[in-house]
Length: 237
Image (cartoon, rainbow, N blue to C red):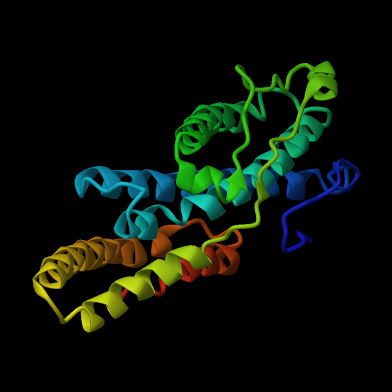
């Protein structure tokens, strides 16, 4: 059973002859989950590019915000997956786990790019410490590599995403209250344009709810859907 924070001691990720089949299936589920999270992050990046959004603006932050939770979750799932695959390779032949390794190595490079791109965003680094992955993926065929393995560390900082919610509230309040003076009229028009872009990007995100969320893997469905809906529910109006 996985705890809610997805943190497991390596001593709790053991594979015995009695549970090797379940461990094999669990590894498939974990790889599915990592691929699903990376796919969501890819869609977020595509929307940011399509709408020319910046993480410095409220509209950009409302789209890019889920990246924080994606990084936190993938770092923990990646760590569990590595330990599990190392243990599986001590019980099963390399040929049996060939597909697992192929999928993992692809995930490794994609996840490395996600972390690399996130480090260039002050919006992300202000909220969490973004982990780093090594130059090369772990070699599961060499058990000695486990001794040099380092888990990716992603930790939350003091400032969290309530700031994004407060910024969206400021936009709506400003539109209502700025009804005085010529300069205020100009500012009001700029704010309205920003709000329109904000709503446009939120409307674009609806397809994530209709497609991506409904097609994620069966593993941990409730947790994953809760993650996405918790980030998008105030946007999808």
